[in-house]
Image (cartoon, rainbow, N blue to C red; front, top):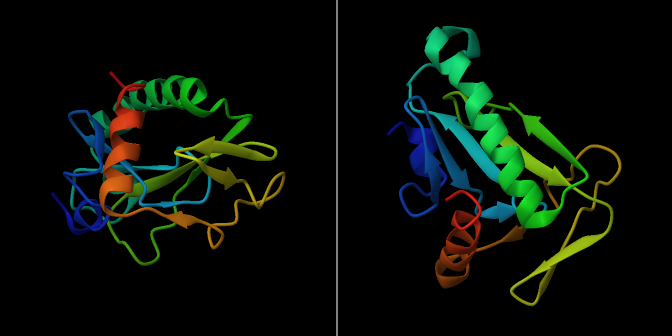
Length: 142
């Protein structure tokens, strides 16, 4: 796996895998259910992905949107392709909602709603709590 995938905790954060993509729980959660969809390729330009990877995005996005709607009842969903610190192709997928969602006795507030997501206002999950989030989210991706 490429360095971006490893940085986001693979294999411990793995939620789903396709031929060209992996879906990982994001250890820092700006909103509940935030994930990373990362290309398995080492390319650093979206246009350099093989056409099959682009085609597979249709399948992956449908699965992701259905699962996250069930998990957190988002109102909007943002796909952010930032690639500033992590070079390989990946999206940060942020479910958006007015107010907060609660999980594991913790509120997850969408601090940027209804504007741009506030990535700096995120809850960082580690260890058992991150593992519990992964386990919980995986039930929606089964």
